[in-house]
Amino acid sequence: MRPAVMMLLCVGLGLGVAGCGQKRCDCEPPSTLCQDGVPAGLHDLSAEGGPSAEDVPSAEDVPSTGDGPGRGSQDLSGGDIPGDPRGGDLADAGSWVPDESDTPQPDSAACPLGTACNPISIQALPYQDTQDGKLGPSDLFDEYLPCGEGIDESGPEFLYVLTLDKAGVLHAKVDEKEGDDVDMDVHILSALDPTACLARDHEHAAAYVEPGTYFLSIDTWVDDGGIEMAGPYVLDVYVTYGSVLPEQAGFNQYVVEAINDWSLYPKNGTYTYCYSDACEPPVDIYFGMVHDGYYMGQYIFEGTGKCYCCGHTLEIFLNAYIRWQKAHGVPETTPYGNLTVDDVDIGNFYQYWFGWGVTDEASSGDALEYAGIGMNIYPEDWDKVTTGDFINFSRSNGTGHAVIFVDWVKEGGEIVGLRYYSCNGSGHSHPDPADPDNQTGVSGPSFQTEYFTDAGGKVLKKYFFIGRAFDPGEL
Image 1: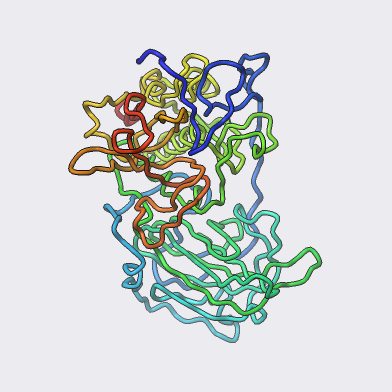
Image 2: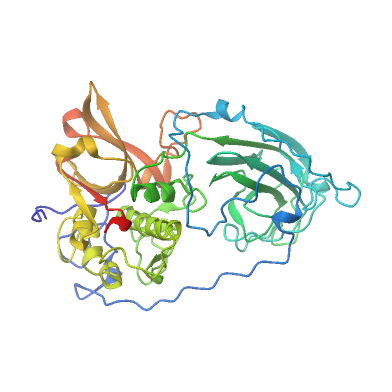
């Protein structure tokens, strides 16, 4: 491994504050991890149990225009992603028409259109529909989990169904207007089940989906006084295909699947970047992870819905390994090579990843190399770097970042910068910045582009470290 030569201030386009009074990467958890300047011992936390599903119609009870429902919101197994989808845009979505079937039509008197037994069928994309929420024929769902916990949606709703034949990001938007006393919220579901919510929003919900059948619920929000905010709405539905990363070889494929999963990591500011005392959630230790972190079936890190760079890249790594295990039928208790729970749980692997304790520079490559499950990639092999590799770099202004590689930026055949994914202070919603649906200024999980100093940017090539995880099946 390289000798420790400098401290990396590991923040997403902003400065952090070092803790414990020692030289280290600011991507580490703050001083709550320290006791008199020494990392605290292993913590004893238990995962909370999730709510049970209500007794509601299943997807099999609903006429479908295609195959069964796609991935549920808690399924980390991932799935096959089509070949390189980049370059698709909103216009591509308009050409999609699902295969029709000879499914018998339900009795409209017994099952009004827009109910669970007769959802409105979306036959082509892009799609638009106009309804009045006050006339919603269904009142089946009152709360959506996990994406709408505690939000009262007990008013009437309209239900929709559609089937997709390839992976992409499903978007559903309603024309939210401030001050009109109407609040019709949009929910994307993987099944007709209130616990199968992939995404929700007051106006624009989006979720990465694989081929399969999905449902939309345009439901009425109820305020604290019990008033139903039902009213007219215009619904727009479309799919963007340029918003997911292409499939990769080896373990990088599972890293890509984790990043592509909009149900866990929406790139729309739902989960925001945070590395300061002002925004940190009220937890004993803030690890910078959106969701709880598990390894070998053990709950190790508490997720808070906020993130910072090193914490989020480690979260993606752990999530990717769970996906690999499920895809290969490997028990969750199986280690990744010789990587132990103790090493992950604030041990040496964790310290190399964050840049403190055993080292004063953050390097996921050194962490992978230490555990014998990966390697560093040096400048002479930069042409071999692929999407899903892990990177740490420093900037000329004294800051730094931990990211996941997407692509090189080249001018005249020369590498001048990189496109990456991370938990950023401000980033893009899509891998391709030219995507017509790309949104900028996204805090949290997002994409960004930076340039090296010799190309007018701030990234220092001298302190640019790349690591790749080996395929667990080959260890």
